[in-house]
Length: 135
Image 1 (cartoon, rainbow, N blue to C red):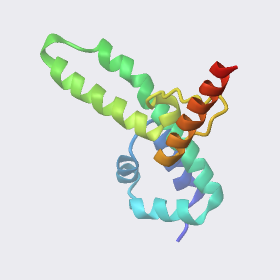
Image 2: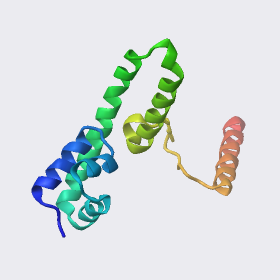
Image 3: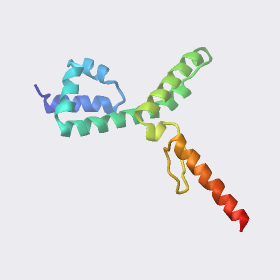
């Protein structure tokens, strides 16, 4: 049975605030599987759900500064654990924003090649250097 538009709006609002799907569903009294089924079956809701999750992750990132500002000497270890968890979660949920930055450049060379390809490239470069030095 599809969710009502009112329930959909509550779910999306909760997710945009950064809450987990579990806590959102518990607060409005529905089962998570109901939401997941709706996401799977309704492409329009799927798009809204995906965007709400992205906004929610950004909201969680915004709250990291508040966590740091509220730190005391007594809770530094707990705070560090929370921060590490949030940073890790955000790097997995929004890797383009919070993931590890890798600079992969190719200078017109193939990326993702096999060892045999690498050997062939090295041999070709060595041959070219030999020919260039002979000129």
